[in-house]
Length: 282
Ligand code: AMP
Image (cartoon, rainbow, N blue to C red):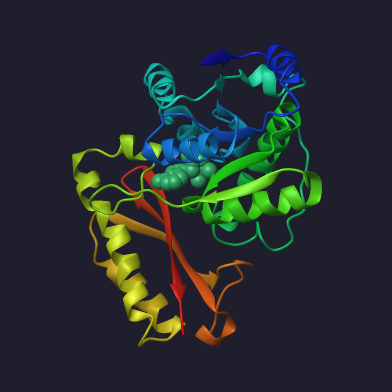
């Protein structure tokens, strides 16, 4: 595996690829787990070359301590990527990505970045769009891989690609979970024993919502979820939304859309976790 930290070196390397090569790109913030691995494996399967980037992007953190505490496990990440046969690892510094300092660019995603994560983490998706745009410009992949665990991020990236990167295919990838149902996340490393034990309740409650969606209205489920979390001593609900799975517009009735998605953000101690589940009503 080639490990490159410089934009210039990477650009020279990529410019020498054969015209027959297809390049798959998996952007990450490191502390890799099997969820990330599944994205890289999908890229390896669909492309002749695969590039994974590890860059903890400061412009997408709206909380300084979240950025400071974000896990860093580069040695283990390199070992894992080598084992699965990733071709290139790109590990740029902040200066390489933002040579002129942190940019102030504003993107327009309509309503998409005004709800859920967008409403609760001001500036987050603008920062995501900034770094992904920069990485797409440098790497110019044929395909880029994003997880459905971050369903709103996936929608934002699709919108960004439709606006600015029409030649890049955005490939959605399924959420990988621990045996107890907890969605894999780099942030799970930050959960102590107590909160790690509590965290699987998040997915259990999403599964309950899925089950209850057959016999309950959207508003009944909103109330139900709020009540369940209010009784939980270890998990604090930041938001719970049921939305159209495509537009992510808030659903008022099941008849609003054929497929809805239930999304939430939860605080387990100082760690913020997100998850979602599709609700197909027929
Ligand atoms: P991150 O390093 O958290 O920025 O994630 C990098 C990519 O991996 C994003 O596209 C995420 O949506 C995806 N990802 C994160 N967790 C999972 C998971 N449990 N299953 C599948 N993909 C994931």
